[in-house]
Length: 130
Image (tube, rainbow, N blue to C red):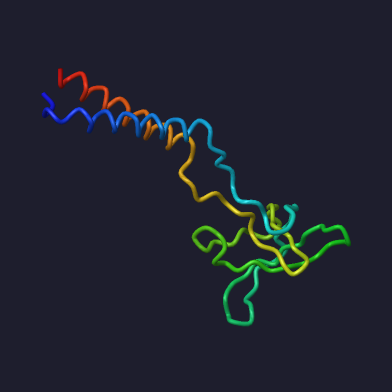
């Protein structure tokens, strides 16, 4: 059924798949740490900035009192700014605010699925080669 291959090929594939499974189980895949502190904010208006680009004006309740800062439309998914009165979490710094950092890594279930499928295929190849 499967072509006969030198035994090192499927065995090294099996070892690699098992290592991917271990990475999926034991790795910490959280998002990167925020630049400032994560606070609740409310979109109070949508306006054009000095370059003519749309931006959301967000009111953040910081330690020293409410602060208003702007977030460019490019920071939002699909450049869609949330409607006014929408509550959201922002990464607040005294110099401005931004959306919280998002993880751009493969999710844990993806790593586990990749390792599991690879291990199953290598075991099938080894069994078919007998």
